[in-house]
Image (cartoon, rainbow, N blue to C red; front, side, top):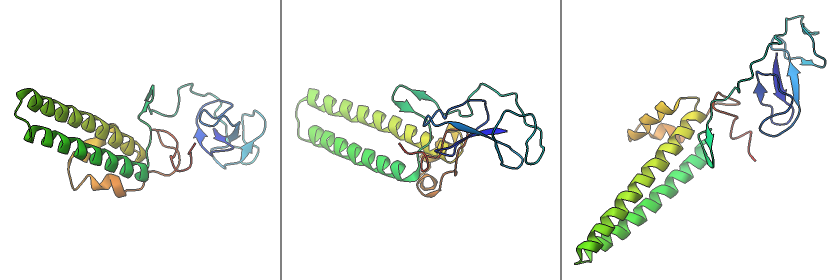
Length: 179
């Protein structure tokens, strides 16, 4: 037996009464035949299958959220636009630093340009890794799969591969579960 959200159609393998994502009430569903269970029972009234009534209190998701940074799923479109926006921003910052370094006689301005460029590259790298981890989670893969994003041709996989449909271990489908 599992619990199904009546609004966003997410499935949970634990005894909870409300969806943790949208707050809607959950409906008990028989895992064998898919019939809704109206009352607490030990056997399904539709197919007679034994209903597992011992539930884990652990969540069925391993997505991590710390403050405003989340490592849950991200589909292709936001991944593409965030990646392109970050690339354009990095290009502008490095071009600014290049002009700063090029047209200065002062060693202070030179080193300031170098430091700004290095900091911008570090921020861009962290942001890119964060995006790729979220995209890996949408594909149903672990964060280690994001290492493939550093291989130029293979990184195209993250832009074009459709994410898993429905709920996966990293959270709800971002296409079905939009706020």
